[in-house]
Image (cartoon, rainbow, N blue to C red; front, side):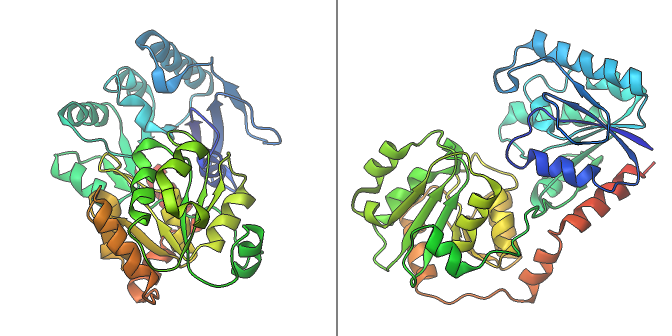
Length: 352
């Protein structure tokens, strides 16, 4: 079996996701990427540069045409678009022509709200063989909308934390040796709601320290300092594109992972997954996939989405309570292994 894997970027977890699918695989992997990955034995094709996040129709169609040309050269059994969210804007235009010749699979990392996106997602699924989503809630929502060709695979934890411990991580992050630490990790995108966390901390009286680590986007150091007010002395910043080691150190140093995401966010979360893998207490909003995941799998606490006072009360409660993973949480954690992730994808590739 030959599979053509297509991705639009290689930063963040994109590279780890791809590596997991092509490493020690029982199929031949061909790659179509925006840049070459060194020291890989599989064949790689580079497509022309395109701004995928502000794309124009002409550029999008030219890109799809390049992918189609690569496919005609390689004649794969399957084409797998690893970031299917790129198809939302133009309703999957062009996918049908590719799917007529090659079994086409896309992975959607988030489900967007609104009627227009509802029409778009239905149009996309009508033009492909199968779509993959990473949360049970999104899978159920799509099934309820009449979409049958959707497959659920949990987003795994790709990192190895074997050489890290909490004490050394806290020292590296400049934290006090005792006391609970909140972590808000990953890029400071607007939909990830860092401003809600900073506002809520003004109403938290329990002792705490906070790590905010990740690439600055909507909020930079000046914004954070202004929003934090009196909480500023308790905040430790690492505002940069994090290496794997830096992200893992920050996460291990935390006791509680806080996900103050806006309602517009409905998908899988890297900090959530890696927090679960390391038995961290999770605080997240009560909406969508995140809320259901936390509540159904006994992973921590939820607050009313976009409600600063509810978030403050939830943080206060978490800081003053002891929390351990029960059998339900540990069973869900087991489903996040890379081995299980690869098994589920291999199972999908071999479906007729």
